[in-house]
Length: 418
Image (cartoon, rainbow, N blue to C red):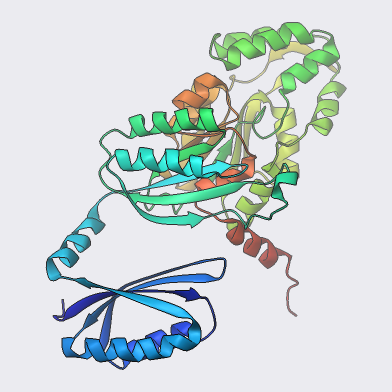
């Protein structure tokens, strides 16, 4: 590294045109080598830091005088901090420490949310490197709109001997304060996901399809009771699924079409799928539900892969039997891995999303496994959870901001030249 005096220059003031030009051209006059630079703007107020190295230390006083004179017209102020070589070397050495990303999701963000989460972070020996708002700017009228949300991303650095302990503490905060918190290792895979796999019932759509069919068959209560026990992990999925399908014997085939035409996508599902497809991600539905409905969604949403259960139909009515190997918990995980092999995708590049106990193996093998509005047993065991907001908030966990998605939408909707 070049020798010379190191000075940290912190500039604050209104973010007006010409301020950055003035600062950088002034520093250029004194042969400054820039070691680091960072900037943030909040409500048009600029906060800029430059770690500058002067080859000729005797130039520093004159530079400070010149800058002081020029800053007057910009209504800005500057602060200088001397940095000795040992402090700089120690700071450089820290760049090799592991980094983690903590993502916060809430309808609105209070200081109490930040205090609880940051206290957990710092008490775990982690240092906050950066803070970034992923969601759009908050309007003063936002409390009148139930669809509003806030997402903040913290970049933290340091060794984390017990990530599970931190995750459990963040989960406790989430339950107590209606805020979702996720911690994940910052790696090349996080910025290079390629496949997103969804459970269907109560994840991609609001309904449990088998419950809707059961209502049409007049056995709604009996089937719903079995469904709840199966999704909570109290019953073997294969056994419970066969028992529920058997109760649908005699139901007209047209009932499948009726239910498929009336299912409702969960909040944010359409936006998420549209964004993923535009970005070039592969998508899959891996469902322990009915293939008929999953295929309907494939056509509507442009999903690449669909695996679900096929019920036997004889003379236009359901026979009460399943014709394929039932897609249970392990089958979902196996299918996910088969898709990865076929597409040449590493499992760390996969996002998997589900709500039931039969989704846990799939969530555990994926690089990013998300429990979405899940049963308690799933939320407690999954590495990440979204319990308060819509499905498109998965984009925040993937590192995308509202600005990113808006730019993507504008790009797609822009008329092509010709």
